[in-house]
Image (cartoon, rainbow, N blue to C red):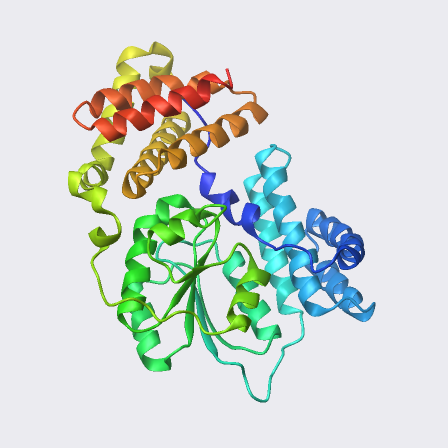
Length: 368
């Protein structure tokens, strides 16, 4: 098994950056500037990208539309192009850096009397910062004082910041479902510190189902929705301090804890079994072996996240997405099957995990 999906993390923010357009007319106008910015991104031309932002503003497009309907739209397109194998990881990283610089070219809004103070941060180990930055910049444009903390903020440091600054709300962003356990700890810790939490990002589900499951005080599907919700009135004050298991009683079966704690062993043993049973794996190059181990680690990570929230669709959705990415690279979905079979053998004592793997095979079968 050599899936070549080890760069799975690199696409998460591109699929989720941006927001719904402000109006059909604004969308039509923004599309022109988004095409121009796309050309600059493809050329790797930061100066041209900044020129597009300045020209769009000069032509009368408001700053929020430039931020979300031009820059955000281009970032979404980057994700689509990467998944379709029309853009390399290096190209995707370059595009993200250029878009980040384009955001910096927007005017700084300095309200005389801010609406309130909001902290915006990515959860620990979530390094996709652009979606959170879009939220932060949208809130600034709408008159909020914003403390933007950026990517992968350790929860202890986030709590220290909250105690120092006393924000009216905390916005937490996460793009990958594998970060949900850490997101849950951050949500409960922030609430225990007395601040309400709004979450956003693909990790929490397209409809926010995992945000609700983890006890967040609010959820928003995009930057505009987040700003609209905060403008509508204060978030509800958080419930009294509680334990993680209070939200997720199924964790009492210990499957998540035991699988998570043995994840490195699961990857190692599954990889060794692949080498023993499939001669072609023994002939892999060092790079292919490294990639295969990374691919197995992703599979175990998404299985673990699914166990945490008792949501097999997290695992099956990841496998279906992976199969589509593989197809774009000329690798059949059946390449995933041996690894799943061997992983299931390692998890014979874990009924929920085995059920999820069986569901994953079913999801892949539809793509064979």
